[in-house]
Image 1 (cartoon, rainbow, N blue to C red):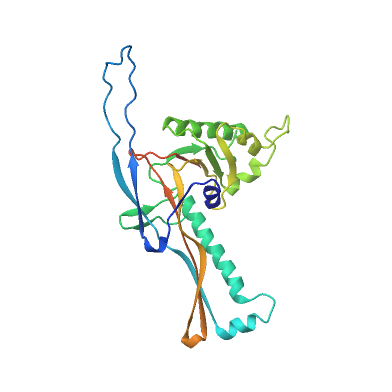
Image 2: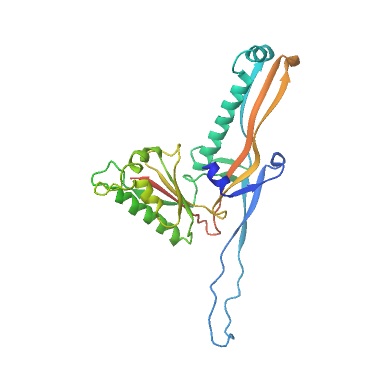
Length: 271
């Protein structure tokens, strides 16, 4: 989920993010429609957008580890140095935390009056009751129709796409099976990918049960705030006899709502 946002340019980069603890942004309302007349003398409503401020905390995601100087020297005589291995594992844990944060599978983080929310916890997301594939009478067409209904929900709130669709791992066995037993020329996943407006269908590892997410991929709905990419810092203690490491980043999802607290995310769960 993090890489999808970054690879498609839905990013807001903060130079020297360590020096900033809160990102303040404005939410903007719409204005009234235009008017039509023959002579142009009729007055349309002369309004202007309304704005309010919202704050997003910028915490650090980090993982610490340390070794004695002797442990490090001994491990470097072997085939797989401890410090390199631990740095890789710690970076993975940091990246997993950022991924869960986007999906809403970490506890919402609040600081300075603002809260970090994810796709599945966003206040203002739309919801949809789905039919579990284990339910009596379920067919692949059932899921296709329900995804079309999710898209219609988004359109009704003036979110017209393009969309990314995320599914829980429990859907994979059904998505990669034949869509039709009569024809058998494509899978359910391939059928869903043909829906107008969908960028892709992705399995999101941390979604649970039979969750499905439809997310409009535009910066007015969601973007990754990058204050610092994953990096490792090192320092010594105990007179140089202990080496300390910290893998850290500032990667925070910003779920954006309009002035009416409406967002372009539809969260489907099996009833």
